[in-house]
Length: 373
Figure 1 (cartoon, rainbow, N blue to C red):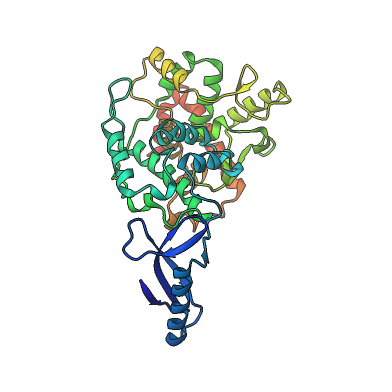
Figure 2 (cartoon, rainbow, N blue to C red):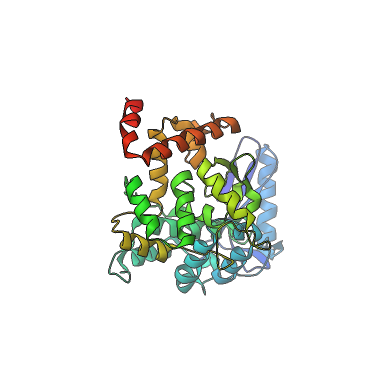
């Protein structure tokens, strides 16, 4: 509280209560929040005068609230968040909507957003940790962390819009995750999986197996993102998890399959992957049942990404190109390698296609092994 000097200006802080209409001085009052004003001057004398003026206005109730609306419940904020066009376009929108409606709203929906505290959020995390699922399994730390990341994003919009001073989720430290996996599907297992999968699941499996794309990126893929002439998929930032666009090269097999599918597509359906003419919301249950019928144990759909990366590496594609194709990145490395030519990506797909073709023929395994030596 008081004056704070920064390089460009002094700042004045007072504890205040905000009723949505005016701000009032509230020293020692429970629920009061610190409000900061920029003086716009580096002269301490002028800053002290400004401090006195602000204090007087607060005591008289002359300082207007900068809230865009009155007190808002988390339910109202969440509904606004889920209706935002930029959120609805995201590839993981269905998952966000499910988590918000089924998990966050039952706990926080009727609370005012400025009454949500870090202690409440930690209590929610503990409740999630001890909750048993349908099959008696506990919720994983990674899943809880994703809940909190979504919670933070929703409340972050309230801070951005002037509805909330600070984001309480930022004060809750995420727990360390231990979810590394190394399950790779063999060619024989993949063929067996395809034999026991429904046609629409086979198509999604093939795309994941040969590109490493995420399930949301595949299920939400529309024809305007597919460049059949160039043999590429061009994803925009809104289509990807990391909010950055990328170019995914197609193998010859995928290109041929997509060309055939394009000829018989539903004209008024923008999505590539359909079932009965409608876009596919999820294949989770169908995929799980196909794995069971095929006798494949310990494999999840997301493991297709690891499988694709491993196969690309075995095909001799350098790791930077693989990261560019699959969208894996680090802030320190990947920003230095963002000028890959599309020709390089198409060449990578051609080499990968050759590897997959050879892998289907047991007599060529010795050739592949010799090439890796």
